[in-house]
Image (cartoon, rainbow, N blue to C red):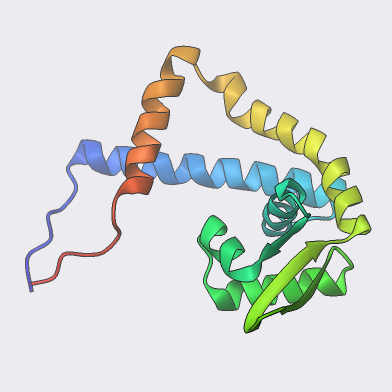
Length: 155
């Protein structure tokens, strides 16, 4: 096994700072959604994608790709949301294995009610603290992370 390329002190500080900031953002947004709208951030993510699709429906496999979720996680999330009346699911015509999920009136009502306070919570925790001159370089850095293939180099 190859010896690890340990992080320098500065890299370690940056890494821990990035993790702490990510946890703070996630906690703040989760708290607002849960306390004010009885929604989890995962439910909100699904509802956003459904509400933005032209027919208020989306194939489960496409949702998995958009949210970077595996099929099992998405299936369980969709089943829980269906029990809560936020969406419905049905088999895809012409594809016996395909599943279409569709926004219900209740799901639409919930996303419309939650969206204003969600955007305010994002503004509060992110944009009110971000120097506008840093928006593009930070965006470039984050896009670079997302564009990189994931995997450990193995010998």
